[in-house]
Length: 463
Ligand code: GDG
Image (cartoon, protein in one colour):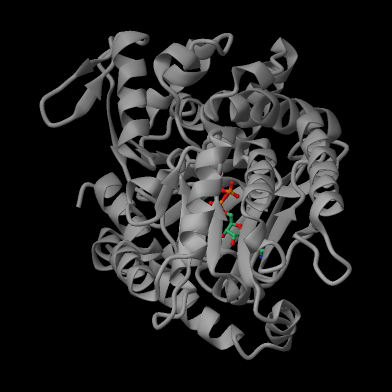
């Protein structure tokens, strides 16, 4: 990718709702991968500054670091409310995660979402050069390419959806879905995580938007516009995570955790606090395990790290209270003076420490009701000690389940099944743990985050 990109002379322009500015410390795997892609051929990262101001995009803030420029704009309070809280996270996120019951649709929110996309496009357009390739990320920015095309941009533009995509039968529950989703046809390439998401996308375009499938997999819209869609399963910096987890073993915080556990086996969950992550069901499954397997009591501890997110959306505040209540309930029922069944922590930790926590855990419990990919599942696997690896219990409805076939796959809504899997994981002999882990780490070493971004950009650039 890199040599071809350099030859073509074009820069990469990444657009996402939030921008990982270079002065901020230790960006996550995706942000580092995008930064690396930008450095490869020089580029621009454009998006929201994360700040609220009197006016949306009154001015564009520029930061230059090496050959990469960061350009960010502020949002007005009203636009943030409509675009981000209202439409993106109040309507789109739930529908994309198969939760039409949670959708709070308002025409004014859709209008605000379209308005912010329009302003983003207006501010971005003068910064783009003719040979640049644009890569736009996620559900906040679906209509961006269609507006940029209207403003005259002829560049190659790709889109990657980080969430799942439900079948057309569900997507049509979103009011005005065609007004929004048909704008996807303005991209040259649409990337999704899995073949299931891809089928859903094709189904929508073939049966709702009047598109036709052409030989070679391109879709053709009734107005003649051609575009391509494909699955690109996102991944992690596998070697980086393996190294960080090895290093973390000697970190004082990790040692403290291990000492506090003594002989107990650790089950770990790490999630952004979100109703799509299946946390209440996970707690219930763990409670069930303790109820029916008294032998395990005091021999196991469940550590759940749940970083708060999107506090401006009502459902996120509700789930936080629900979890605190459930954890308290289970602890109240089973705890002993020297043992607490659930350690629930509602804050975030540095990445390096997380990898150490993963490595200390006999079981990684990753049970979202729906998840585009779920990078925690992949990080858990890559963090394990090859000589004595833990077991991944993984929801079938995480995109990661398509690749990590040797995990113990469960339906997260079936709390009996999850409790069974926990029992199996806690008693699994080392030989079997090693075999399962070896198969999974091979997948992750083969498809890491560098492979993901270079494959996407190669297809987009037609290399
Ligand atoms: C979206 C899609 C898709 C978690 N807690 C802390 C922390 N994390 C890091 C993890 C991991 C990342 O955040 C979470 O990624 P996930 O993939 O698990 O989930 P989402 O945030 O919902 O991501 C998802 C992803 O986009 C990529 O396309 O896989 O399906 O929903 O890397 O390690 N990081 C730090 N402190 C924490 O407490 N520093």
